Image (cartoon, rainbow, N blue to C red):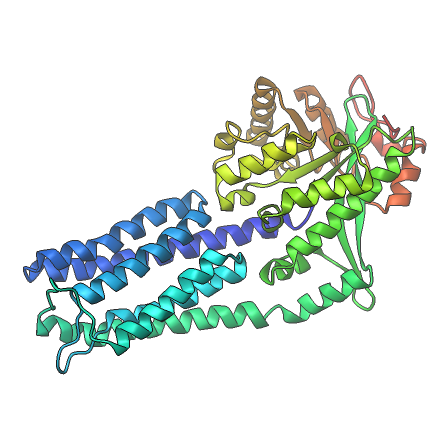
Length: 455
């Protein structure tokens, strides 16, 4: 598992920031629309209502997590709007310079921030177009033949308001850029060194079936610093996400996991074990992710059916369709997918219709209180019933007590994971535990007590 909680929190912060930005744009454009309409400038009011519509549409898309579409719609639409408005209405007059084009450098800066998050040639083209349009509109008295210059009294307001707002937004983007490039640099440098020095390792937590047999494990990322000791993933994963290191770290995790699977595959007693690997949104949404997985499977000669990839709802930040296509491509290879932290998101049920998921993983927050909270117990029963109706397996994580195991067993969960069956441990210790005798705390009150034995 790779910083799932911090990743979800980051996604929530991004969604709220985008929502605030779109509503601010909608409000600003609405004010101008009303001003133009009151002054009888119908054509200008209609034109100014365009960014209001775009902003509201983007608010809806952001709320659905469709950030890829939002970025493209916002930048392209506002680039065309600023150019068109500058040529049609905001034409320079003696003593009244053009000011609408001042938003173009801001648009270019926002585009650069998006490019840092997910580089693309299209993004670079939009940035270049924004800057070129700014220079041309500033240096040349360009206007359409049918241009309708704004009245002097309104231009007097815009001359002060537009530059002030553009400057404010520009300063905000500079601050965000500075935070992005400099704040996590120390941790990021340490992470790069940690990978070189093999300070990052995997721990393996057993996954046990209803017969008490260990059928696999989940690979959990750990970092042991030479001077600071063990560093929590909750501390270093956000830093890795901020500077774009997660695809690299995720690649390391996937490589190590397949090395382990190849090792197990060569041992008849362990050849049937599966290994679950949590994949971050930034790693999964890399354009070459499927090719990378295929290459690793081929290089290590691993049976794809032994590999399970765990995804959270945050991966859908790129949009449902591209994610579903990638999952389908990897499913054809034999890889299975688990929807992690199920029940904690706001639209998990809708995803089950489109995503080739084989397993639902009940979040540990529900498991922790199933013996004390009737509501959480009812939710777990509902999740299990839903999975059964859809033909999906259910995995309960965070199982820590015999009472929790007994309840989950009675409900019908297929796989169990948690400290009740074994803590996350180094590979050699995990392999040794497979043939070890059952420990006292693995006995539970159900027809088939759990036991640590490879299945």
